[in-house]
Amino acid sequence: MIPRYARPEMVAIWSPETRFRIWFEIEAHATDKLAELGVVPAEAARKIWEKGGKATFDIARIDEIERETKHDVIAFLTHLSEIVGPEARFVHQGMTSSDVLDTTLAIQLARASDILLADMDRLLAAIKRRAIEHKMTPTIGRSHGIHAEPVTFGLKLAQAYAEFERCRSRLLNARAEIATCAISGAVGTFANIDPAVEEHVARQMGLAVEPVSTQVIPRDRHAMYFATLGVIASSIERLATEIRHLQRTEVYEAEEYFSPGQKGSSAMPHKRNPVLTENLTGLARMVRSYAMPAMENVALWHERDISHSSVERYIGPDATITLDFALNRLTQVVDKLLVYPENMKKNLDKLSGLHNSQRVLLALTQAGVSREDAYRLVQRNAMKTWEHGADFLTSLKNDAEVTQRIRESELEAMFDLHYHFKHVETIFARVFGV
Image (cartoon, rainbow, N blue to C red):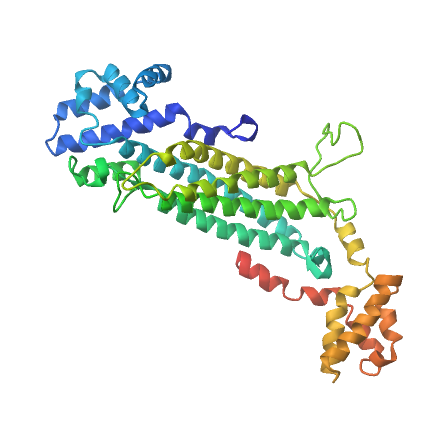
């Protein structure tokens, strides 16, 4: 994580202060249940909350202890005993480090998901607003980067909206899958701790109970979670790439907002570059890169090892912080995006009506011409436009083989732009509802 691409609310989830506070709450809730079961004195459980609950944990002191113990959880428990006193001996009864670490990671990822879901809600709202604004703004659709048939700019954004709605549903499922609690002791058998403790901690911390843990929560859950973040990042890149293409000088149909005082180049004062969407492309690459090590973490030795640990110390904060920043940046881009309908119309007309070629092709087949011959007739007239700049409709009217089958007035009617948009309302109803 670097501050340049980080927002404070998400960063706070991964701070040492937050981590140690969650560790304490897990330990304290577990001790509460142990007291209820008669394993530890109720007074000890009360004292742990009383002293530890209002304590500010000394991160420097914990780090100092860890330099000696070479164990982060033991360092924390030692520092907690300095705060709580003799009653601290009842903390961590029958538990192992993974009970604390894995449950904490689940809580952090669930909280991070809640921020990401709120981010996506804001992005969806921005896309919807701009899609409705440009529902019937004509523009050329492109396949292979080449003019195809007309669409509307609103349809482009409606597609993005539907994609991010799917992303949101995936993230909800990933959040549910990752938010599990494991307080099962060494090798996950509950030999020294009652399963009721796990159930209590899960309930108190807003988690589900892990059905079977092998001392660690199974890492397929984490693999799915980070893969989901990678898919969301890919959707961010898809929309960012579309905007970058539309901002190219030769296209210039849409453009990132260029603020007063902004500079595009240290050498060329005229430049207005799509730096935000280029940045989003790079950030998407980073978020996707965290999915692979998460998948490699699934295969641990026997009941557990810690080969996953160092990986997760990186990818947990970095993936969620980076995606949070990217979603918010994309929302700002969409919200302030400059759209140029006049340039869209200019580009739409650039090939003199070639985008109507399919309609003429179909009309010829319906008039009794074989598809192969119809294709040949339409293509030979289309090539005159490509190669010599001829007007497509005029070429068709001057082609006797075409006009034998289709009257000139019928050909003219086939060049009605709005023909292509007759089902836009239907698509919008499917995406946004009636």
